[in-house]
Length: 338
Image 1 (cartoon, rainbow, N blue to C red):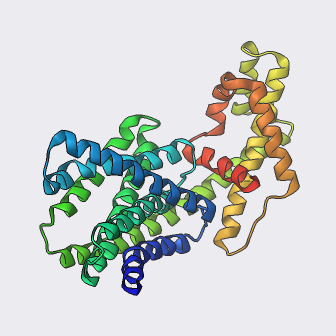
Image 2 (image 1 turned 180 degrees about the vertical axis):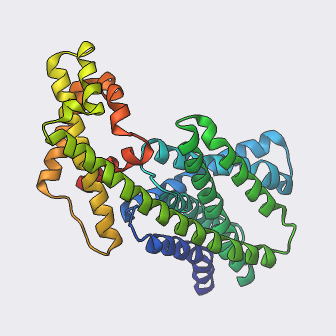
């Protein structure tokens, strides 16, 4: 019984420790622990679903175990894990590469936990060396492949927009890496060593670049939001290019709706500044809880969003700079309330 528990710990602890290290390294605390645990749980569910899918496809294809694990298994398993990441990105819960790395690895962590526990039931007498390979190699490979997919998907989404094509290159890379690992071209211990030597430095570089990108976005975005808010409250907004644009909307919307559009624009600027302020405080090591005025503004913005409708929100897009990070920051504020 002691040996069984030890093997399970060896098979699971390394990937959990790696995930914990990623969360700890995020100085801006972009991803909450609740979200991370939720994504791990989603990875658990994906692993269970892939168990049945792999069983069905193995019967249909009549491939031997080695061939299936090299050419079909990676396609199925990376697709399942990718679905979790795609859902998060489309829901605007991933703003930066750091988020993508953490949440992608979290999905792979959940998958690896189920796979290694199941493997223990199949091979209860496996040696400690086998579990070192499973824990430090296979499990971290699952997390790493999904993290790489998530990072590539987010980076390409910034360039290609909401197109589904943004997700394909990262998925193909994840499948190729997973398949290469399953080919076992190197002895298991060497493959495990390669994973350990390659993945941590890669993640470190990603975190360094992402933190610099976050700092640039915070600085530029803070200035732009402050300038918009100052223009709205100065009494001379109508003389600005943004004011003239809003004035032109009077031909398309009734007067009360135009007034709601202005209110929505003001609230968006105020909440965007609040979100960026929270991130700056977190980076400096301070907690920044959501106060009552911010909660009220979020509620008012939801009401105005319904009032102006999809057409009104679309008309304001040129002024909101509503890229995925801008939408993510409002989602972050809302999640702090909930």
